[in-house]
Length: 348
Ligand code: FES
Image 1 (cartoon, helix red, strand yellow):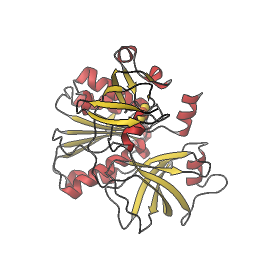
Image 2 (cartoon, protein in one colour):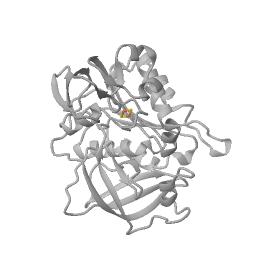
Image 3 (cartoon, protein in one colour):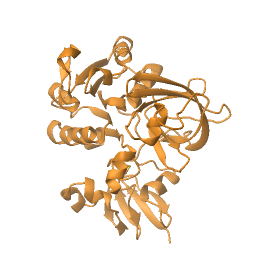
Image 4 (tube, protein in one colour):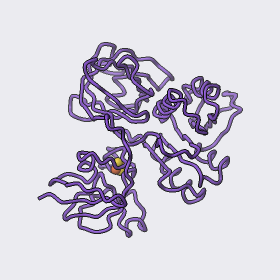
């Protein structure tokens, strides 16, 4: 039997069919709640159940703290109702013409950006409409049905073309193909299948507070898309990008980030390395990238943050920015990259 879910504070309602999660049912009903991984590892979909019975799954106990669990916080991508529910959750305003689709795409080119980062350019079918908001991601649907998620690294389609940044995960089946390792290397003209656009990681057009972009590694990709979107719109909101890596090669498009400082009056770029070696000749900031933000901006109460990269960095930033710098919880927007290896560890 289906159950009704009511979302506070707006009071919007939708039905959840047997077996569906609250998040999937909301998205199917056109109500966009924040989400990223959809597999219980990132906590982006966290909401609070005010009343009603539900099966929370295993994930909340693993990644939410005891105090939040006691207050009814849960992961809406995992929660399945056993009765009607009243929940509290932030709703995301999505452009009306954005529709999630599956389609074939052709690989146009594979261009190395760093020893372990490849830019893939994809050609979409010209007959298919594909609109997205800068910052969203797509999923490759592989032959065995498994999926791999990558953010679009461009602010808009260019002649029905998309760009993605793929980091090589040693032993990873898909990324090894991308880097030509092992059997069946990916090459130009190959056809892949995608689903997208997905995710709620994009700029809130109604929020004029100064922006902190926080990226580690290929978490730069969706930030690139957002900044390109700002350039296209002439959006001059104050914005600072903190991009962290271990060594200089991890900051693989510094030329772009430095160029944005000239093209966007309110934009500033702060590169941060955590493992700079003496022969790198690095004279910039060092340490953990989210701590560099806290050193520069000890009071984040008037800011909004868009964080993307490895899950440990994103979670540390969420916790420390809110607890130590006064960031409003709803002003922290995140997209954590979970690899197939991360998921295997979660499932183990
Ligand atoms: Fe639910 Fe990531 S934990 S979307």
